[in-house]
Amino acid sequence: MNALTGGAALALVLAAASAQAQSAPETAQQTARAEHPDSVAAGFLPRYAVGADLFASTDADNTDVIKAGVNLDWRYRGPDDYLGLRIETASFKPLGQKSTEDQRVYVRFADKTGDWSWKGQVGTDGDTVLGAVSVHNDARFRQEYFIEREILETPLGLEKGLYYTFLGGAFDLPVNDRNNFTVMAGVQDFTGDNVRTHLRLNYIHVLKPEWGLSAQLRTRYFHSSDPGEYDYFSPKNYVEVMPVLQVRRYYGGWRYVVAGGLGAQKETGSDWRNARYFNAQVTSPPVREWAFTAGLTYSNTPVARGYTYDYTQVNFGVTRAF
Image (cartoon, helix red, strand yellow):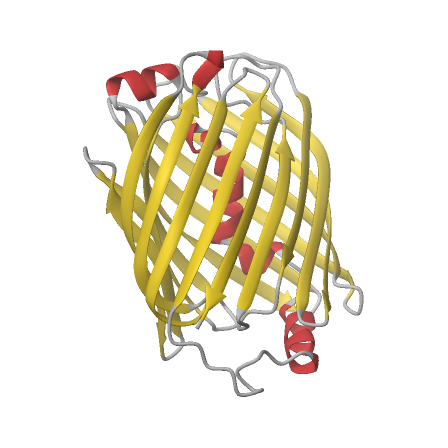
């Protein structure tokens, strides 16, 4: 993803690493699941599945990324229990320049034992190991650990073969049913000398449990040990503070999420300026013959060296279970 170089999509990945805390309260989710049991209860137990998905992003610097993949799962029991193969074509067009294509092959997997669940994909683009793996428990004080390796989607990143490896952990610190803190800490090691340390602290207050409505204060900070080493957004220090409103609702087993925020951001050598964020998602019931997911995200966090930035991404996926 484009922002894993330090910008908008990085915020998305980190938010996903602490997805439970960024959402409406777990009590509302449990209520929705009880009201809309999946198809396993109705007697449908899939054995294997095929799927396809598309990710596309564009930004104010005319950088376009398209990733299209096909998933072939020889074991499939739902979105949290599968084993299979992923074949992906990734197209990168940085700063309006000539497009570059990568072919990737991954082994993808998800499973659970006891209170711990894990999910990921590990593969290669023919030059190095790529992928992402996360593991989390279902305790009240939830823990999640993750590692990810990907190419830098900038002109120098694609030309020189620059990668990053990002690992860290996210933790829920609930106060009560309506108030929760989450913490994420991580280290991102780039090709070259730069090592970036990340810290995110979020506070979530549930305004209306029956609506799935929460008010959140999301803060994040990172420090680069070798700022400006290549052509990705890498100031010495970066900080963002953003109040966010989020609604998560279930209807007929479908999940709908809409979140938006307006805050402030600043990096070393600049003044404070506005930070904007919007996200919308829709997900079908988890275990059906056909499953769908779609999302739209907008952010204005920089990726390249420029400070005027807009980033938009869309994704869509479909799975057919047998």
